[in-house]
Length: 243
Image (cartoon, rainbow, N blue to C red):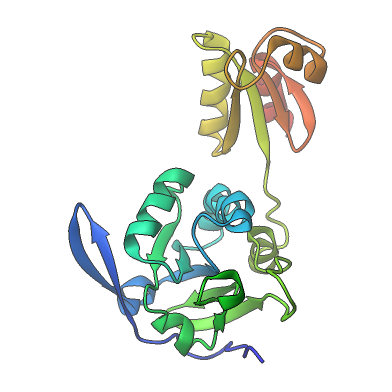
């Protein structure tokens, strides 16, 4: 049975990483001492749930976590540093530190190293998340021990609700076109307010027909916040005045 280690210190481990084509040793003391850190561990880089939801979720909410006292977000997997570095590039996960537990030492000492030989993975980390304060585990969310790869409690939103139930994340998407000055204004407004957003470029990511079907309009930008259609840059400006 996987053990909840709340109240305990994290294991002392040195991770072998690569930076600028050089080997760099990173210790758990460097990662956790004097800081509030979120760690989420997963079975493997480039795997479906890890790539589509787990890592992107924490990367997208990094700003909200920072506003609520989190100094760093660490993603840990039993993969080598070359794989983790390539995955970080592929995911554009600039807000998360990807740490390679290549030998599984950290995962093993956490009691989270499991056998996934049935998938051809060998020994990998079980999926979990934890909040670590100055090297001491404050809270753990461990996925239930059942077949497959459960993903029910270690997600970013569950962690955010624990840290601050009132810190509801904003999900923002906007349709734009290349060279549109009003689109640039809308993006600047969102950035000024600290909003992360998904940009959908008409002609590249979507067609004008899709824009019309979604918004009833063919003009850009068209902004959506948490599923609510806000409209163009002027409407977004008004939204921020009254929100």
